[in-house]
Length: 181
Image 1 (cartoon, rainbow, N blue to C red):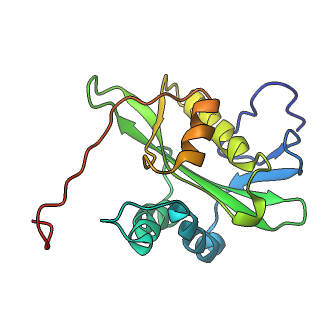
Image 2 (tube, rainbow, N blue to C red; image 1 turned 180 degrees about the horizontal axis):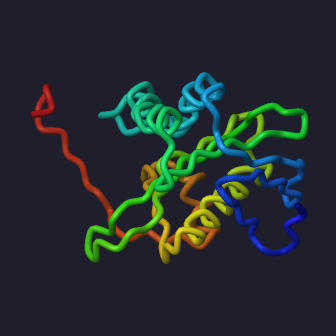
């Protein structure tokens, strides 16, 4: 499907071919056979200056349970998508879930994981996946979509702000002693 000027809208039971990136990509639902790719790609989640109280490994594996859960027991409240290049190579993923707003309890979409292989960075694939997540959210009747990003991840913050996302709350952190407690 040629997407034209509008953001592509993804329906969970279909694939979407996006022509707005320099590459033709296909966005499709994840399958059990994608498990190794997905878990390996989470190393990209720490590709920025991580806070000194976190480790790159801690960040990389923190979303494994969400990814594995979405693969093992997909629900209408979760969307796990893979972006593939024209040659069939998987290069990115996005996991979007349903959450309740802290203040209003209104259901909304939340991007849990967005990861793009280093070889595919800067080619519009992350944006295409964000468009697909927004399309999923709209199809569910949600009025909002949220995500979390580390303050030091300036590249990701710039992308999100370019896509119209705005910071809402800021979480502060303080280590209390050598054992953290």
